[in-house]
Length: 99
Image (tube, rainbow, N blue to C red; front, side, top):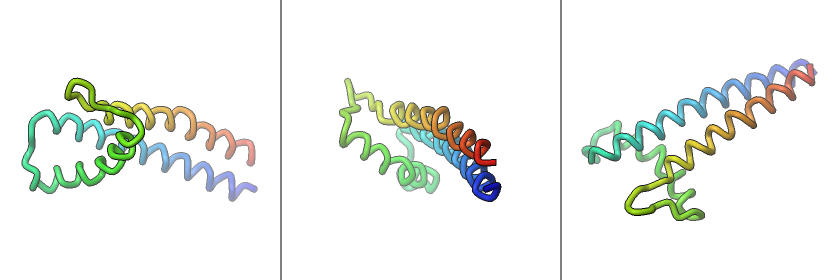
């Protein structure tokens, strides 16, 4: 069972790092949207390509634009924080109980 325990620990740490990186991508994308950047810039293309599918999914179920302010990045960040505080520790506790 120690192999499954180690696997779950590795998954939880990797998931935590991936969620943290994506949270910063969302924050940077939201900040850049205030300055009307060049849409042909490769960094801007990357930011839009990595965040717009998630924003579209959120906007499909929740109307997020109020007074021309888009709350989709805020909702995504809240979901990421929830996953970091609930899912990652749950996986770690499960791994520790299996060992």
